[in-house]
Length: 257
Ligand SMILES: [Zn+2]
Image (cartoon, rainbow, N blue to C red; front, side, top):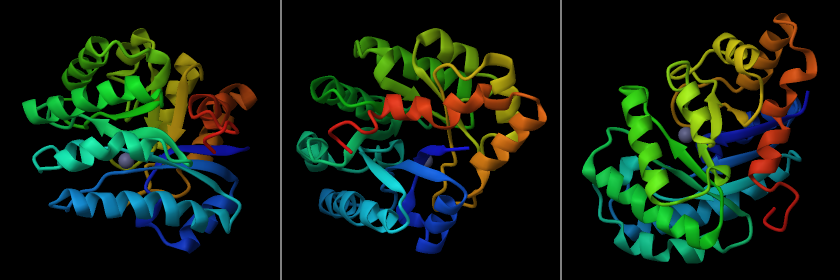
């Protein structure tokens, strides 16, 4: 099975871990910005610089092609990142930046909503796909709030991936026309639950990811989910969710990569 991990944080992981992911068949991935723990735009810009320059080079040593997503995560919503926000369009124009993300809502506060609105305006101008975070707590209500903001921004659903979808939000996100991100992570879905969602709904507009980052996660979440799909007798039916859909969404093999 070929794997395209649609959402991870490569900067939080060792080279040995990146190599492990390549060894079990991860051919491509997108590393997204979070930027927790900074207090100024200058730090955020240094962080973006490292993400887009150092990480793809490191992954390339293991023949894993790594695209970069940049943006201001909801954890940064209470900080003063006006300068970073102003500079964001310039950064998004750089080669190797394949998406905006991760953006989104955690609590759904006014600050978070304003930050995501400002960035979706930029998304419309630059035409890059957008990866949106949804929370574990109060997921359905916050997902509705987020989709309303996407609607107000008049962003085409075809360029939006709503991530960390689970059983309670799957149908809502599917009805919106946006892409559906299933994150196989201890905080989100088990491989079994992700496979059952694929069995129930099929792989159309679904993308799998590990969200491997700073917190405890499972490097093997995609192959484990593939095994669960085999156990359910899905065969190759689920394959687009493991690879092809992410290629389409992120324009893999296009000029940005
Ligand atoms: Zn993440």
